[in-house]
Structures are given as C-alpha cells and as structure tokens.
Image (cartoon, rainbow, N blue to C red):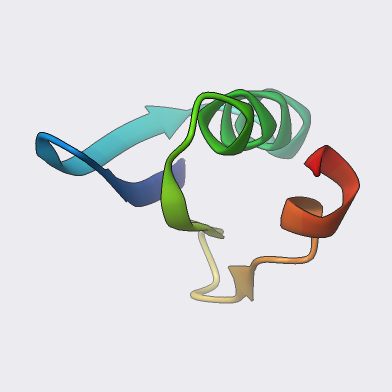
Length: 56
C-alpha cells in the first residue's frame, strides 16, 4: 500500500493507493489543487517527492 500525505488549508490530507502509478496520479492532483508538503511513502518506507516539480 502506498500512502500519500500532505497539507491543505483544512489540515492534514492522508490517502492510500494500491499502486505507485495511482499514488503518483493522486499526489500530482493534490499539488495542483494547492496542497503542500505532499509525499508518497511506498511499502518499503521510501519517500517520493520528485513529482511536485512535474505538477507545477
């Protein structure tokens, strides 16, 4: 399971997706919607944040 987290004006956003592709898609959507500090943590504990530049 891939965990996506970030912040918006209401507070913490925390979501889960089954695949990296789905998690990347959702993370990019969150960034486009104005969320910040968005990251994906994969099942091994690796943190992904490089998608933020791609969405900007």
